Image 1 (cartoon, one colour):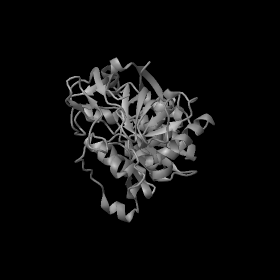
Image 2 (cartoon, helix red, strand yellow; image 1 turned 90 degrees about the horizontal axis):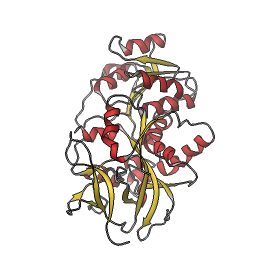
Image 3 (cartoon, one colour; image 1 turned 180 degrees about the horizontal axis):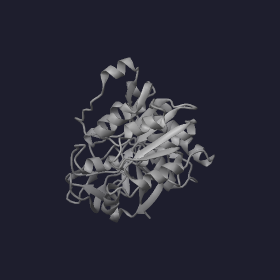
Image 4 (tube, rainbow, N blue to C red; image 1 turned 90 degrees about the vertical axis):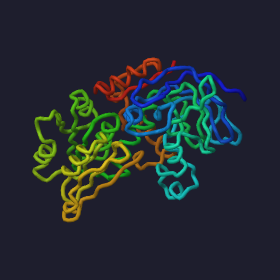
Length: 374
């Protein structure tokens, strides 16, 4: 295969405008690259941040960072996958050779970071273009809102072909980020107390991870009752409807005997909820920020309490995990009955209805949804 192929994709030409589902050209994989047919792609708030202009990126761009698919072509030198293999794209690829990759922190990979913010492959070029030849940028190196997408070999993890691709798509972002935040970023343990502010796809998996870790009290906080219902299924021991009539920090402290929680997780990406998660964390406790905020966001933190209460405030990217190692482990955990996936998926849409999917997400009607390509 040496010529561009036509494929259907959802293209964002300008922030705060609808995605345009149209035919684009995808170039064949070059050396060290693979062409993947996306079978399922996650409907995630991270893409919505770009659509709304909260995360400024170049345009036009094909979004989508969570998904699963089948390898249909490989470039020269590719050794980790073959045509026909099933893969999960990694939205923060690991080059394997920079300081962060060698130090066991692939989510901070210098190459993956550059790809995320430039929209270009490691060689500085793109593999998408319009029918008129105008280049289209990639998102996080994977662009799963295209039915065919070219990505670096290092941006895909091979999985068992018998594992359902819909479930695999859920694991690639929401599950690994949420569960990883609990185990790798925070270190929640048996008997700890936890509050999760925001119960979307990632927050629900923080709840699930806390239950897996043996936390004795897991307080789920959200503005949408449906999400709190799912949180109970995922393991929440208490739920708090943040409807504006009660102070969630005071409510969390009341539920914990006035102390606050050992671990407060923020999974929304708002200044207000970051501050609430921090204020709801007890002395000696840890607050973990997982939600994505606009680049220049500043939060007000009581530094005196940071010192005298010996609190910890930290961020968590991609669950602080190693996707190439940990994605297969998460699949094994699901197959062993230790990790829930079915309860997370509430909606499915075809690619042609992707704008309807994001409208439903904004209305708070979706826990986790997928774009399904037949």
